[in-house]
Amino acid sequence: MALFGFGTAIVLFTLQLTRKRRLLWLAVAEAEPFDAARPVQSRLRTTLRATYPSTIGLTVLIALALWPQPGLAALLAGILAGLGGGALEFALQLAAWERRRGARVIAEPGRRGRVFEAPR
Image 1 (cartoon, rainbow, N blue to C red):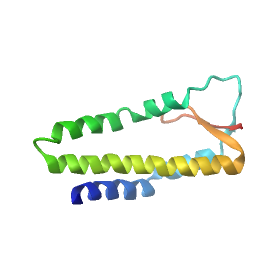
Image 2: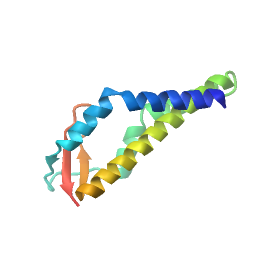
Image 3: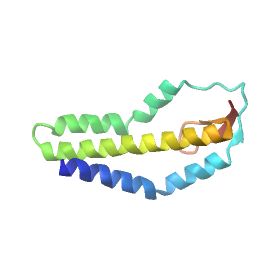
Image 4: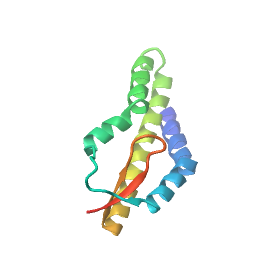
């Protein structure tokens, strides 16, 4: 349990301090208007795309380490839980932002993808 908690805490703490997090919120604040004629992927497809490679790869590593190295598996499971907790926190913050603005945030895939704001 200690290794699981340590892995979770390290990831959650690190996610709070990342530069990428600040840049993402800046991009959301400066989102461009969205052209409704553009195609948009479903939320399910977007979510599945976001799970690869980190979440799926980490799950495979946990399964491989479970029997020979249960401590390592617990640490990795904590890291996975931290990623899930960070994603949930971001999703809740984004949903609150969208509710306040009466808009929906749409982002292009990729590291340099543009961020758009579409009316609900």
